[in-house]
Length: 544
Image (cartoon, rainbow, N blue to C red; front, top):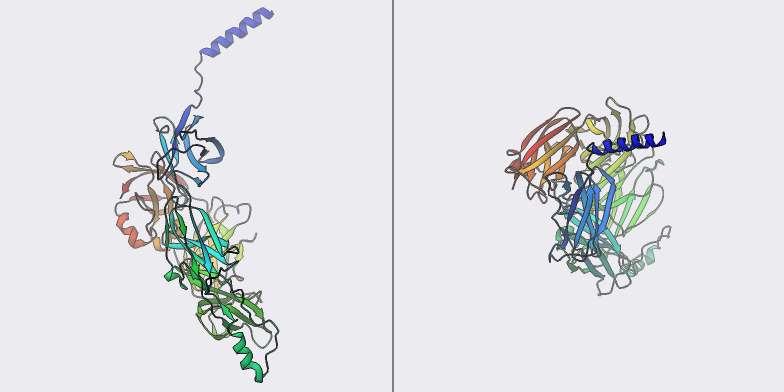
């Protein structure tokens, strides 16, 4: 019986062996890592791959002495390839901002002769000195980078550092690009009036003021090499591996005395905290004045000093009662200045409600975000369980804002209505006063897969852009990607509507959100009509 059973099992195994089995994935990704400038192979580089649709699935290896790497047994699919080493920050192939070329692996796809050009880090360092050439210690040094990532030229702070006892600072691990350096500091010897200090008597006031004058000084925010306005800043253009020295000399100036009356004599208050003093730099970005010193000088009165003469924005939110807003003032400051809140433009009071079309609210926290196009500031208000939100404690000034949702997975804002402000597409124009918003979110969204073609051949590394109708008012509806090794790309969470797809060989430094710039390319683009939740496939011809 046992022998007969063994024979049956053996026969079954033999029969099973004759049935064709599905082939195991056996695709390869291999290549060589070289320095982007010298083209010399780089050994010891950590090379990692991640499944593009599921970054948690990954593999890693290190290049051999001759710079070579290989991954075997890979399922067909799209992979993110990342390399890093000492002196080389983590990066992908042909990286531009947050975009780089993904590697497609599968039948009839070339993935075994990759040449990965790794870009060496650059650095900026320098010293901060005062009027006498002495080092300025403990100053705050800010690094700004100029890009076109939001579709227009924008210069944003990306890092900061403090000077040591030699006045020295350092920014390392920088990508090639255009940078600016600025410093904010306070003279070590500066002395300002103390809160509650009694006023000197008339006989001694002039003498005391004269004695204090050399000590009541401030440094303006100063840009490399010694400009006191961002318009005079010298750009620092870094190439791979550059080591640049950018020293800055600061100059002491008589400090401004600013007195701000924020309420009335009837005992009203002006909300929480102190007025905020900021200045505009570059394209309009607002940055706080870090060297200022403020204190309460009585009921509803604040005093500031430690501010250098210049052009500033003074603002104060007012949360003292429901429905009220604070105020702001943009002006030049020099000498002694007094401000009264009653004489200045009000901040806007923005509230509203958000509904989810045909769906329940997603789990977790959801935020409505207002993004000021001029100042680059973003303001976020959490949506309550009842669907309401309130920006009353924030400095919402008159201006143009893009409205979007944050942390609302698989949802996009579909409808925007406003009382007390003007709406154009997904853009809100606020002039002040009380604004009520009614927002609608939807998950009726499309996914668009496409291929960039040069003639009839796939083209990797192109910037691909999905342009909505009326682009000036619908910046949040743009979608962007970089074509991968097989020329393919993906746009996700696309609202229903009319679009045009364009693929540009050298589009990364264009003001691609500017309608005038887009007109050069839209006429040769590919029309795309999105209607409801769907998956679309398109082909887009490369434009130079």
